[in-house]
Length: 343
Image 1: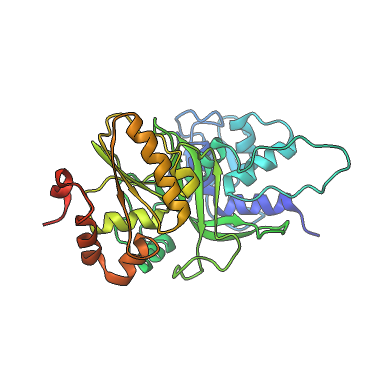
Image 2: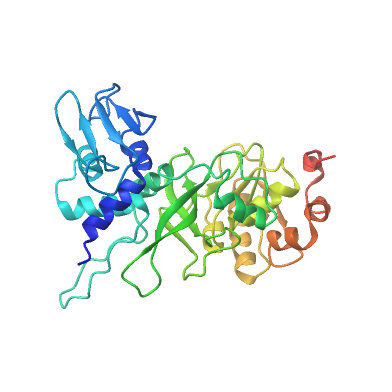
């Protein structure tokens, strides 16, 4: 018989190092173990969490022992100790959120139910991002290179999760799939959300699933800050779109708002003097640019719109190459910023 608890414990064990990094960050990996002082995350070498091993039985991955107190248990016990969660259903919900796994669909009841906020919490988004890995050498890098992108952003806003849970529309059970995880941050740099793009098994495209992308947390006003802004900022919709601009002109500070709706609502940072809005060639992109342009102009920020030849700038990059894209952008960038163009 299927047991979701056993399934969660097994999946946590397969991602034991990510769990430890998220919930016991004061420790470090040594060989096959994560070593830390105790369950309260104090520095030290008393508590050992096994990171590798069989799924069950002696030497199983995800089991821990505290040599000073004799305490032992599994990764759910670690999560319980670090979060203070006492109700078991809430503990399972926390584990699902860490793994990027969808919460179960509850059948409709006759009595009215209070609507829940969609998309998960900023805390869950931050834990998912922390449990992910740098993209170099992963399927995330393979995917981006297949889109003509070799510049992955200087801020480390993109990571890779090998088993991020995905649930098809209308389904109650999820399947773990590889995914790019993007951190959505606020003006202080705190993670407020996460954006997931599920990938094909070979990384040569997006997964053949519906939806292929999904966001969680608080997105409105925030963005995926692929590079840091200075006196100028370039804001657009998609991650691949904005990385394509970096590919053509590495000196451009670029943010991705993730959708046309969020593009119009991005909160501009202090110190920005000139704003470039990189639009997609569709009516929604045009309307979003108009909203953001109006807001920027109200606070004295000069605005220019960057427009692709094709549907978006990644289409341009893949069709024509980065040199042609650079030449196309050079005609749209203000004279005060043309020194950023590669010589």
